[in-house]
Length: 141
Image 1 (tube, rainbow, N blue to C red):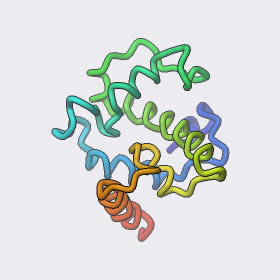
Image 2 (image 1 turned 180 degrees about the horizontal axis):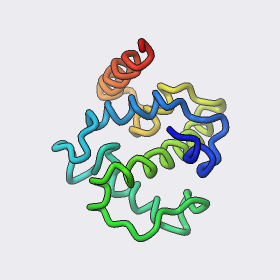
Image 3 (image 1 turned 45 degrees about the vertical axis):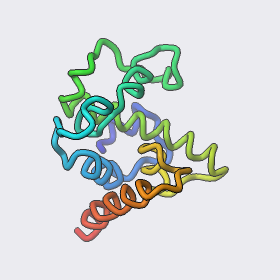
Image 4 (image 1 turned 180 degrees about the vertical axis):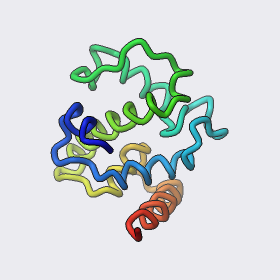
């Protein structure tokens, strides 16, 4: 993630760019229009329609940085969906900290993004396995 995002979103400490890349890889395989979940999630980072509405609402939990004048179909553009996903990931970092009563590690952060942090389902294990495989490949470089 470039320094501009870090400054704009006031990310402290900054997010590891490999976490963002592994998240996107685990969500869509970097396909900006993945075939799965179109009724629920959209774009390269698989933002849900509910999350998209929150990111556009000036009275929402992300009110300090609102995306304006976008439509759901715009999530097919990685130039739009990736900054939105990064913003949402930073929000999920806050919610994970609240749930855990400490800073989340990168895996806990990804699970919170996916809505699985407190889940005890097989889906949580599967999501984490996919994320770990992508993250591990990035860290081998």
